[in-house]
Length: 197
Image (cartoon, rainbow, N blue to C red; front, side, top):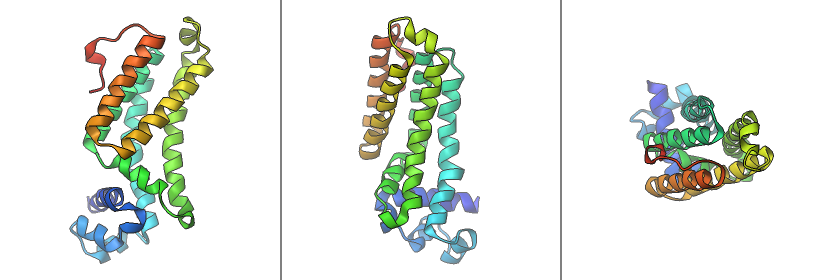
């Protein structure tokens, strides 16, 4: 629990103050612990960020991937991904701004910046995998599955970027609009209970 509290404080402070602006002392205060306790668990701020990625953020995002894979079609998979992603944003509102802060880290902090790239690439890969798994379904209305995967990739990157720079409510609304647009272009109209809001 101590370690987890430190990691949550890291996500919140890095999201609010940027990677360079968040200090180990501030993170300790945010976790309501001494600086010695933080250093007992983590040798550096880079170690804290890497651990926050592996132990907190990846498990949250894995829920979105599992939800997408559990569906029987591409569109239901994307809808599930967006719905659960919305739940993750509600549960951890700082997650997107944390990613943006990592992207803004200095060139000297290359490993920290690469965490952001990994987070985006992982989501893109899951959607591409989903499109490939349902290639036959996607090609029925005249689309090539690779083109749908490329469009999904652009959508994912855009939604992530938007979430990194806007509040949760607007991000959720953008996710709902993305579902509607996908439904109109590659699938039957979705019922209102499929909305990721």
